[in-house]
Image (cartoon, rainbow, N blue to C red; front, side):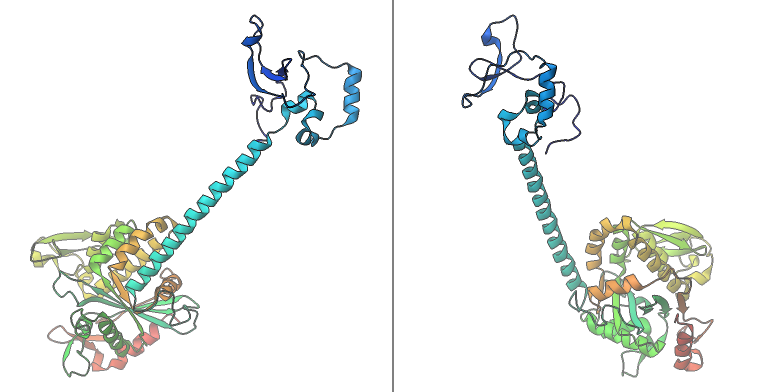
Length: 433
């Protein structure tokens, strides 16, 4: 395509270029050499097929009268494209080259078509990859919905359970159990944390009691049936909190560490200073020693390993003999539940930042080995987008000894007065409506 802004150095469009010369045979001659014979001329092309071609003498300005007559004729510029023989030498010199224009358009068209094909294949490949991911992490079809894609006025409750995973002691005991309760239309969000030492009947109908963190383990038959385990845990949380918990999701902490790394780490606002003993290795059979972890009040950027330490730390310094404990309240189940909520909030905030989006494919690979849920990918995505943990009204409800729980001589936790209605009424009263 011709460039309308070509500079005066363009030999095809410069208004100061001299017209070409023709020899007596009609051959187009550019640049003769005065001191050399005829054969020293640079010859490009010929006009043998044009009988009217005449020998062109060195350029002479036309008489003024002739110039005036030519100006009166007002030959349209289109003539330069239609009939070259009617063009003046200056017009012929400046006319665009149609072949180059067509070639440029053709090249541009081909490039655009190639780009469209590439982008189209990327979209197809991306779509296939996302759908495969959705099938791997859920019991539901990726694009299906159980609640009109969260376009409902009804409260939606999702139980999130953190597991240590294979290779760890108590791999299928739920270290954390948090119900995320959402009103999709208003985005009002409530987090209800249940301590792992809450004493309940396990398994259901057995007449035997155990800690609530073992419900998933028994329900899943030690991980063999994760769906049965998730459903058993959801039913138990419904009985404890009074909320109709239909949906559940398990998170493998080892995989979650990789997810945090994949999105570039998280910025965590640590509300209070504390320290703790922490296992040097996830596998005590390989290394049973301890290390000291220290967290100071303020904002800290954490990678996956550091974030997991912050979420799971629970042993006082006296256990490993590496110093004196600071702020023992942080090492209780209640403190841990609050810290896990902080990590969830930080991770969601990071994912929603545009700069993180190019990293989401890596995070998706890590997530595929980390989470499992009975929400479809479409519903889970909408749930995450509608959930708002930055709203000042967001309710963070932790069941503890300071509100609705009491402790027996074996440090097991029960509802105050052994009345489960106490817990249910407390949760209902403090939800973000």
